[in-house]
Amino acid sequence: MHAFDVLGDPVRRRILELLSEREHASGEVVTVISAEFGISQAGVSQHLKVLRDTGFAQVRPEGTRRVYVLDTAPLRDIDDWLERFRVFWPHKLEALATEVARGKKSRGSDD
Image (cartoon, rainbow, N blue to C red; front, top):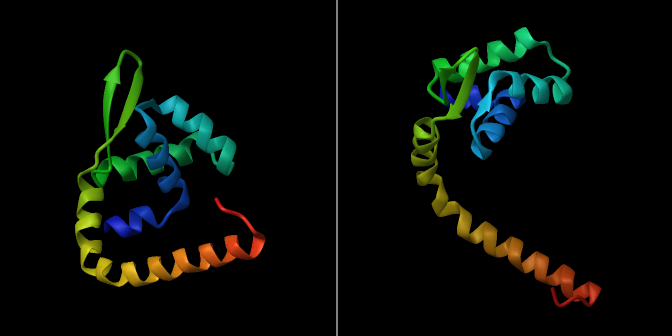
């Protein structure tokens, strides 16, 4: 599975967001994801398996718990791939900054 296929799923992206904050036991991940997406423990486990199998997450046993931690290597690969497209960003970001400034000026805000 390609890294963009992994990131294309909103559940997996949310799990990665959780893991970017700190490591989490699988039960903690299940609690958050089940509440937010309404999927079962088995469904969350399948997403965690995809993240493990594709290198986005590592797991270690801690007693009876399984603790998941983010592995940033695949994210660096994506960042490297995106590098070739960054040449297009400065102009767009400058245009955005101009529009934000115009909006503030029209509202009379100095923020």
